[in-house]
Image (cartoon, rainbow, N blue to C red; front, side, top):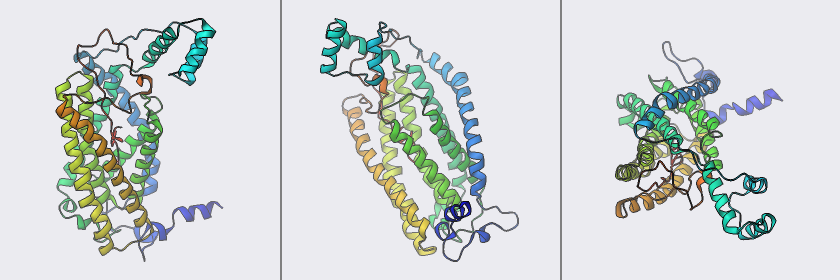
Length: 382
């Protein structure tokens, strides 16, 4: 049974083009190396643990001191009056309806308005601090910036960046190029770390959607590596990371209460998102994967799956850009980025208590990406 499942998973007819077998790609020429899926799968989880540790150190030693410099304080929210009945209901429903309020009023002999106030205070008590949000965004901003600069550095001198048809010449007998393995391992470890940290990070309304997004990203990265489509895959990841950098930068400006900078960065993010994901991605990368690869190597089973996933991703890009455009227009004409529909669950109420340490300016939240957590992208949207 085990051998049957293994043979089904590693089917040559699925993964490889016609007349190519695993034996053909397991013995590269002297001095060259082909991608080894088992190798990257074995090192992904240990490296993800290392990324989580690096993140904790970064947030403590770099992000928190930066937050203090920008006067973004931890903040101590007002605490709700202890009440076992209300607390029990709060665990299942943070915003009771009028019928529940009426029942609670009779049970506790409290005025309904007092009960509403208790739930409002309790929701704000559970809200993550602005400093925690700042630290999370600064970590993602740093990763996206570093990995984008790194990937752009080795792609800039790679011939397939300037002639994308070279992604398919002599496929799948394409040795690992310098920088490709590091790029793939770093991205895979990062998204595995997001899978784990999502359970301890700020919980937002789109928790399940982002969980599926991170899982799909991991599958796409692993799939393209195992299928030796690293050249096209590295271009896809680089294109997506480009806009994520500016989204996280806009969030940092937002948390630091630099509203004009936040608006400018978000508009810039919108422009880059449009250029990279609605122009470069579909008309350059997806076009090449669909038509150039068909002409040069011909379709096979994994080819159909890969193209299907890329087209689904493009549909998501269009939907996300529609939402982003609405926010960017408000930033341009109203001078303020609107509230994030996927903001943290605890602060979903429209009634929020002001913090004693807040500055005298609005505190809107950005609409994140998949990512973007971000649209990536948080992006992540690979």
